Length: 226
Image (tube, rainbow, N blue to C red):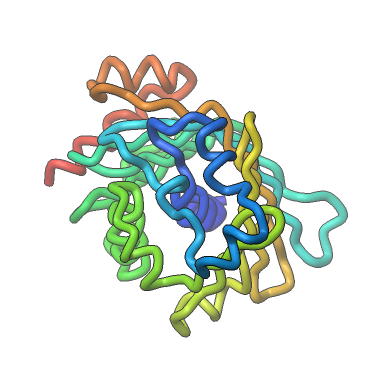
């Protein structure tokens, strides 16, 4: 389950809309064929956040070869540019991972905080924070991005990403972002991101209001100050 959180966090947070409304984002992506032919670059600005703090809800279903039913989960992601990204699973278990600019940590309900020191977690943390603060160059450095009929399609550039990932398809509607992720191990994951909202600031009290089912997860933001 912890690995599932890492993978989901890595790809869903690329597409948080920050202060953009769903209507604005959908209009930015749904272009005519003549407009698309004029440029090969999709409107990345519609997908990248423009605020220093925001949150969104998500549901996910991962399809694994050999399993009849997908592994389903849901939760909320909260971000502040001053500290980092907090990714929280709320169902079927309460589990959280925080990726700060320098330090990362995880927490499962009823257990002590665990400091994450691996190179993988450090790399994910750096990439996530770069994308969440609207660093367009970081996204284009890691992925080939192209417009398709449904929205955007991302394919990895680096060998490191290609070992785990084949392609990411993103479609926007007025109510949600739909993300389909195909992995190199013949598995796939379907993500739906909803209720994306900008925040003026993110205090500990506000964090607890956003995560009433797992308020202890908010303490992980303290690692963003280390």
